[in-house]
Image (spheres, rainbow, N blue to C red):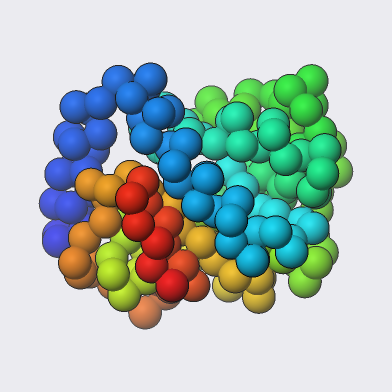
Length: 182
């Protein structure tokens, strides 16, 4: 746990070295790589996320694809992530915990129909391990879905090895600004 705390702090400090605009620019090559994968091309239903200022920027990607694919976004409710379909900016409301915009509307629970999951993280490693913010939101959700899990991050969030625990869910692929680990 202490190792994770230290790594989270190091990554948080590193993120502060970049402006929002720089992080947005560093996000474009990540999605260019994803768009070329067979997994994305074949997918009809994709779980994404509406990014916070310190994460890989997803807003443009979500808006680019939601009319062609079913795009699901997580919504925080208590200690869980519920999924809702993104239907454009008019469907978004301020979320309960982090102030992130979340889609309003009915809850999506057909986890077996999800074809691809694109997941944020604080850090990833070359063994496809993911470290989140520490509350287990995504680990609980990821255990419910069989779809391929793609972790996305900036290059500085990719480590040789990160500490893991038995409940941590591995990714099937990691895509950073300049690499792809399958």
